[in-house]
Image (cartoon, rainbow, N blue to C red; front, side, top):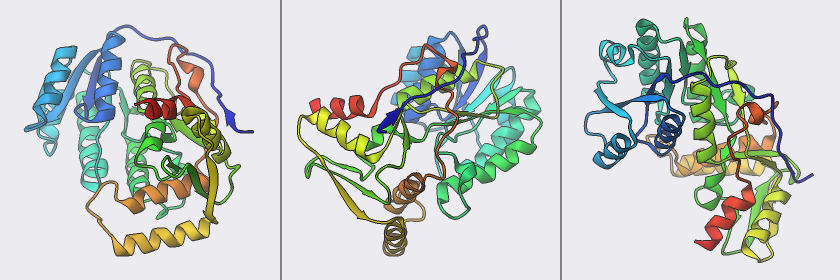
Length: 313
């Protein structure tokens, strides 16, 4: 089987509400803001002083209100969260952001009486992974444990890998060589969701007071053979599989790359992407069951559609 798309029952959408959005000047955050506004939400975007003028202007033009905050001040954040129905985090970074800043934001949300919190997870199912198998996901799990102890309803959105990465950062589809490279088992099913669909789903979830602790989505569930077929169809040229080795080989490559190019202060150094790919190919963080059908109005893009858009550009 090459691909599967699944889902759960739909849920009703409440009336307009005030959503507190942190990280709105980033790529995912900007998409979430737009989808929230399209759904009629009042969006209060929390931004740092000195944030990109272009990004802030774009948010204002779409209808979001901008609040400059000191993310190191719980008091300042509490005031900014006042009256919100849900805090959505799309923050990106390492420990000082994912653990420290989000914890202050969480404490502020609780202090302000905000009933719900959506953390910046947007990933494979890190709850199924052993510690130290992925640095960035370890940070999300650490914050998740703090979030679970807080007196607030929490919902994490898990979307697998952003499909968009297949056209650039993820070293899987080699367009020039017409190869799809992999390690391990070519039949292992993998979860892919575009940034656009992830943002649309997150916006819908932010306006839905009945969400569970975890919501799992995948624009397409496909194995490596399916990725190869999608690349061939998208480009009109025959792609071939190239198996580098087993997962043990990839693990050795990760250790070597991390030793040679540590770049521990970067959010996404090369070895971090390799860790993510290793996790996915292991099958451990496979998302199930999927909740795609919870909001039936959301369109899902396949791997083929994303690769075809890249091929035609």
